[in-house]
Length: 518
Image (cartoon, rainbow, N blue to C red; front, top):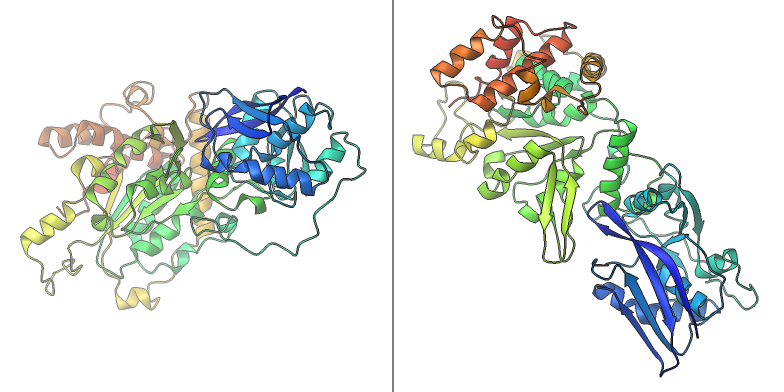
């Protein structure tokens, strides 16, 4: 009989590798085998693919059919190989002309209908990088696949349509009966694909909290991490939820990264545009390490930390999180990525997010102010807040106390604060100044400045850093804290439109690291 080859993509994290789908038809007894490290879902595809081809009017060869997925050492998982396997088998039998370097990415139903798959965006990106520009997908995935520059995308509804477009004889081909509109299915993480595009809540709704509002503006302008400590009902969650609204829209490369991550974990068949607004993730304090950082059987999927890439990861009631889970944030806070090792493969996901922590001052939450109503023992207070380790807090640039709101502030006696649009305009100007200063360094914000820059070209004059020297001599500031105070000082200068930080900027940055009660 014959031999043929088509192309597909295997995803390991966000990285995709081209896979040659080879089909060989032998002269021995009927059989259908798939080799090349397929997972259980891919092994189960054999009967599904035979039925799909038969119900489309072009059955697979009754002879022995061997499908090899090359490279054989790379794990293959999922149903996105279905269409490529059927096309290679039919080409080997001589029923369909060769399709060259076209890439096929779709799942097949028993009736021959093409169904969407997750991760189509990173798969198409990998194909285009490898020089495969012609991509065939399910029509429900076509809009998302077309977001990749340089991709020539063709979307089809069923196998028969693909065969006709490939040059097969249309006589005898059958299309599946039309189905009603697909039911609305939310993403597995519980979010809607377009939730990041919805209007953000307004900062003007927050009563009082002048320090909190200023810290939020600084965090947005420089990409800094933030810790808020205060009693229940003081507005910590309200402030955190308004941070994404202050951030500028994502640039093209960042938007592509964010959309690719969400494509792997969401209902990507409805994604028709890149995610332009920074995402916001707020996992519950009972979250597991796998849910926060990524996991699952075989090749792990991204977790909440990666879904918050280029956005905000908010951990409310931070001391209630498992100590080991929250301490594991230290590595992605430094590197901007999460590496998950499994026996079959290692997946690397981007995780450059802004961390926002909110905590009560004690287990009962009433020790703020005079603390007259607090029933917690000193040991209970130390144990509660001690769940946030020193090395983790040392990586948080802004640490503020959020006091109770007075009735006058709540009733609007002090007047409404600035709306989001006014603060976001200042943030955008500060981000523009950073982009100009950091041009050519591969950095976006002051929060990414390293020691080499802060002690080299971007080192402020000696008189400006004098407060930092005194703080380090007293032992109240670590070397890492020294670096982070300088980052915040640069952001304050950018907000004020100045070329260099001043002593007041350093003092303010130190102030925002000393408001949390010990």
